[in-house]
Length: 88
Image 1 (cartoon, rainbow, N blue to C red):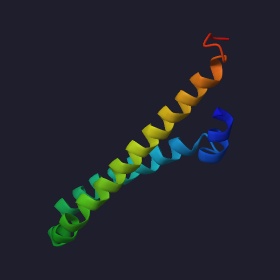
Image 2 (cartoon, rainbow, N blue to C red):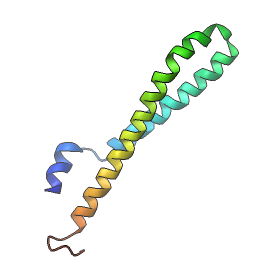
Image 3 (cartoon, one colour):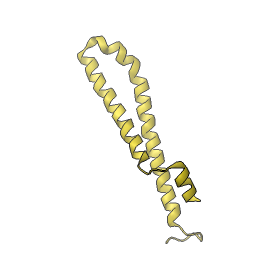
Image 4 (cartoon, rainbow, N blue to C red):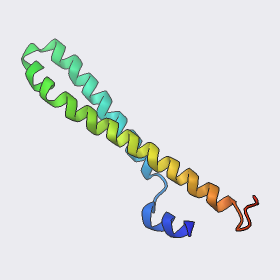
């Protein structure tokens, strides 16, 4: 049963790390854009419009990456158990 879920849901185990990297990169880029908005006052209204959606997307991708990582760990634990409930 676990192999079915692993094949259908997570064909590539590095997927969760990509989501984590992209989410963290979006948050860092938003922070750097904030520093740029401090240096150039004309960009401040644009930054104020874009900061909340960018942070929500970045945090959402981080949470999704953590969730898929926990899902992979759970599937690995299920694979290590025998059908009678004992460990290998």
